[in-house]
Image (cartoon, rainbow, N blue to C red; front, side):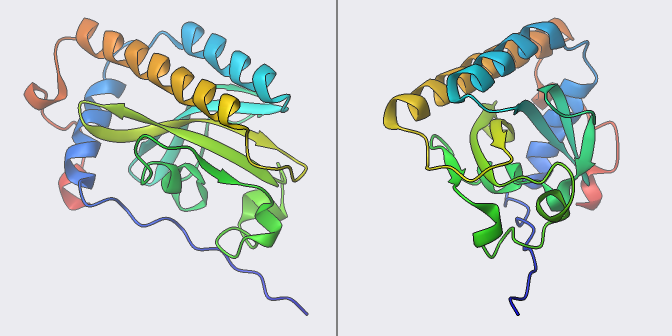
Length: 186
């Protein structure tokens, strides 16, 4: 009998600074409509049923824009995107989550939405990886082609540019904005 477990991604070394940027961003009025357009394009590009722009916020993963999932948050300890933010400038991909020991026992794999395939590109805002643009399938599939990976990375750059516009419109950059909640405890 195969044993299943999952290994949550470790928090990055810059978690305190990263969380300060997330707090500043979440204090703004995000334009989720334009993020949704990017998510729809990512889902279409890879012909997958699920795509999202996620932001890792303390113990949760917030889906700022999403197609194919009826939830707005998941526990961060279950988030594939936690691994994505470790891979600055590159795509993180899992061909079959049931065959990957980091994810085989993850509740998002063993239960709804039954993730099998995942690919994510990090969102780098003010030097910190705050989340990801990701695509998900309920069937295993090969890693994205070079062209698909390049397109997903470009969509992540556009999503980041949109988030930066929202941050600037909200009153400045995160370096000047005090953390709004217990980020110091992280």
